[in-house]
Length: 138
Image (cartoon, rainbow, N blue to C red; front, side, top):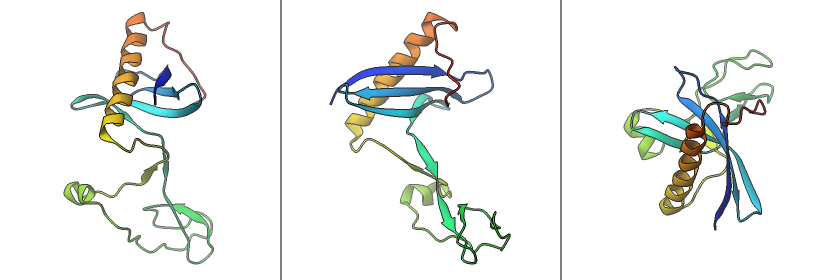
């Protein structure tokens, strides 16, 4: 599978970790939007598009975000959520509130995707602020 296009949408501001969004096209046939370019403590990396996890209120059935204490529909107190925790989450003591919508299966493809996306980001950044797309779609 080849990456045939990477479009960068800058979101840079001096104090923010989120630097840009990317739209990546594979084999001129499949698109993944909302890949985030993030500045971490070890440098730039990409984060795949994700959505917030939700749980149903036992009283009214309304789907509330994980870790909510009260239902946004009926205001009933929600029970603590018990979900399986990965060993990585156990190690740093956190449970994610998000789940990836699309993600690479192999480390080799993840590295390839990250390399191509960050290369496109750096190329757009090198062109100057006016060259980087500013898109309000995201």
